[in-house]
Image (tube, rainbow, N blue to C red; front, side, top):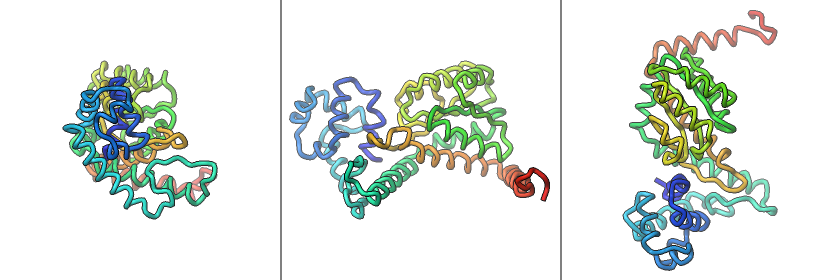
Amino acid sequence: MSIQSVIYAKRSSLTPAAARVADVILADPSVVLSHTVTELAQMCSTSDPTVVRFCRAVGLAGYAQLRLEMAAELGRESAAAAEVRDPAFGDDISPGTSLADMVERIRFSEVMGLEETTRNLDLAALERAVKLVAAAGRINVYGVGAGAVVAEDLRYKLFRIGLNVSAFGNADNALMGASLMTAGDVAVAFSHGGKTASVVEFLRLARASGAPALLVTNAPASPAGAEASVCLATMVRETAFRSGAMASRMSQLAVVDCLFVAVAQRRYDRSVAALAATHQAVVGTDTGGSRA
């Protein structure tokens, strides 16, 4: 698992002092290799024990393990990015960046996001999500901004295999829908940082109504994550030109595809019949709306 992505995902849940350590490392991961724990603590205006607590907060035993993990990770990224003119992962563009370099950097960062997300996807959590969605009487889906695009993609896919699914375009409708759910329904939400107030409330209302709540997020340890019954985590990093919404979209879509295909497989005969019927309904109708 990428230690940089873990740090990025947990950044919002850290104490202010530990968050300063995270910010310094995310700005220049190699700082871990070139500085002792005391030197890093001084750079972050904090103490040695705080740096150690930061390491434990991101799942490591201490600073020595952080240095080993980071050295291995930076080596892998350097090798994977050898074809990119400026190989630093997640670097932003500059006024002098050529169009070819810009495209290459976007390709590299999106491939890395997809790779890290799918390689580290919690299969036990995915299995729970598949069971809930496949058996749901009603599925309510909600996201804001880029999350709304992903929510609509999931709605479309599940609708095509005959499931009762709705995606909400505004917060009021989403909250009303969540308040009317029952134990046999499922709420699904998308939030990169897990802090969007309406998403948090959507999940809270769904659970208060008795429905399980599924969240796709880059930050499971977030307010939205605290309200979710099941979290499916993406593993992406953002830059100034590629905000969290941009960086998360492709990885969230990959999670949606994994969820959809697994749900369709669980309902195999019904899914195949529904896909055939919906395909025929579309290809059998011309642009004017009459049968061909």
